[in-house]
Length: 161
Image 1 (cartoon, rainbow, N blue to C red):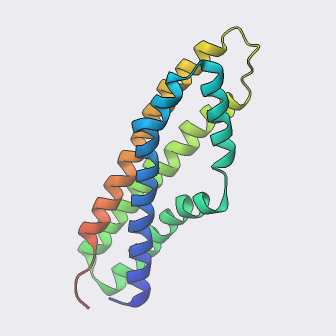
Image 2 (cartoon, rainbow, N blue to C red):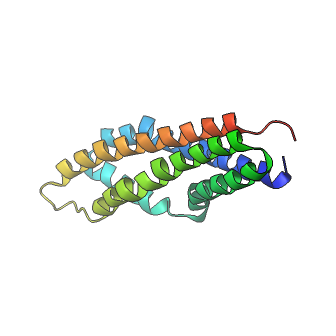
């Protein structure tokens, strides 16, 4: 296996595992902790998180993982053979659809809606409760997709030269 192939496979694997860990953390204890706060405080904390997460470090890993997965698929197809390339492609598609797709179609619209919620709205508490449930469900799906992709990338890891 070439150095480039190893590097791309490793970056996809580490990225998927890292993103999966972040999303698992949010579903497992960050969102439940925010749910324990008074609605106004939880909502404000999540609004701050949604602004802060838009940084070069997170976005590079989040988007780069999908790109490295696809690049690894191509190089594996050439260097390691069909089974490794197919498994890497499946992992990449799971990541792209289950993480990036769910984020763009599910979590981001919820975050945008939350950004426009104000404390003055009569339904602010109810909106926050609905947000918590929906966002956490979608996030758990993203965590699962990311970690499944990471596991498949481990299985697909080409052994030998």
